[in-house]
Length: 169
Ligand code: NI
Image (cartoon, rainbow, N blue to C red; front, side, top):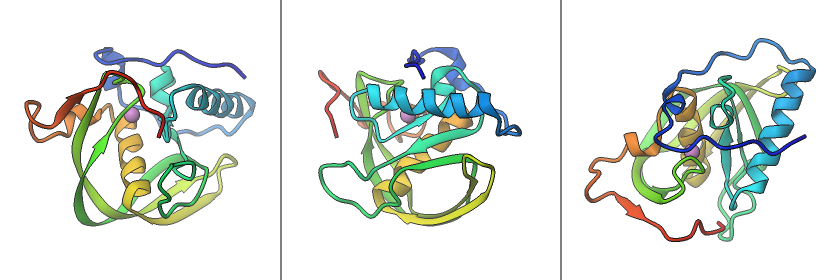
């Protein structure tokens, strides 16, 4: 396992569309290990997407269970070829990103979602999720389509905030 460099905005590669995962082989397991190690090495990130380490495959890791304020969650999730199949409600909330270390932003997301994906072995998994976990998943899935939270804010003048230190969540 090894910690990988994170692509940082405005790196053009962050706009790239990622490919479906088709092989669940040793190299893929290595990617998952590298992704998790890189997430944990960062400043308390609740999620990471493979394209953030310049691997353009549709896989993300999300784990909001370690947040200071408890939120409903499914713990540690590896989501391969994830797809949101249902959305409900809207909510605005503050987001940060390892690839945008100097800013946070207010982003509108669906309040609850139904998610279909594959696990690390390629088995079908499904989740209903809401609140911050649903927000984190929507944020990570955007990376697979080349989108950052900066692309989602209503106004770059009023919805983006400079931060001095990347705070641990
Ligand atoms: Ni991000």
